[in-house]
View 1 (cartoon, one colour):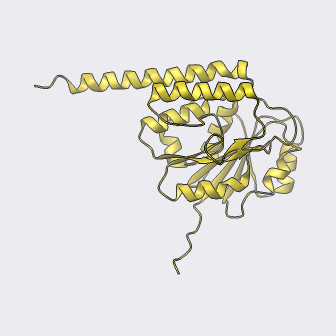
View 2 (cartoon, helix red, strand yellow; view 1 turned 45 degrees about the horizontal axis):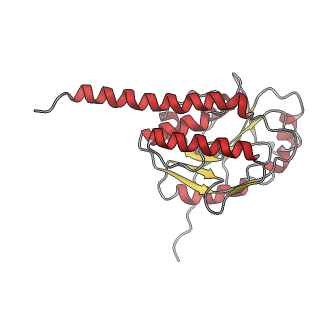
View 3 (tube, helix red, strand yellow; view 1 turned 45 degrees about the vertical axis):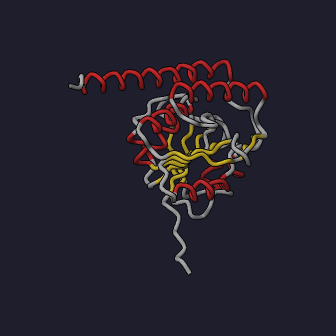
Length: 244
């Protein structure tokens, strides 16, 4: 019989802001083979950190040095120590059990494995019609401008090599983080895969994502990455010079 592969070393990065009611349900379902859990807290005013340490005494707690989802993930990436990073929300909408299928795909040589709600077999129990239409439109525009074929850039459940993440030189501080990651990973030629996953309804509290407030930064990110591609292409053409 072929020898069973051991799982890669993984740091699970969980971003929290007042998630004390949801967090236990998330922490108890993280697979045993995960090497490290990094909790990045946005200065919660409830007992989020205390609850996390109660349920996982081995958890590493990091406090954000800024604000926004992207800032929290960047703090987590810098603090992680394992070969792979898994981004996991603390509200229960993303399923820790999906890590198994992400790992299976990563083993095939992919640098970035993104969960998608819109591939066959995926879905969402937490999405409004307005948000779904906005994401669909933004993905279509991004694919057109970037020359990519993503089905769900916005969903945050993602497994990626930490070395690849550091090489991307990511800066996005808000909900445009996933868009910057996808665009730069594609531009650098990293191997990227999407895996169908189902988003559950968050266990408690309210979503911090606002279509109106966060939609503009995402739109700006889509076009900024497009202009970067044009600029780099133009610079390459100048460096090459005319052929004889």
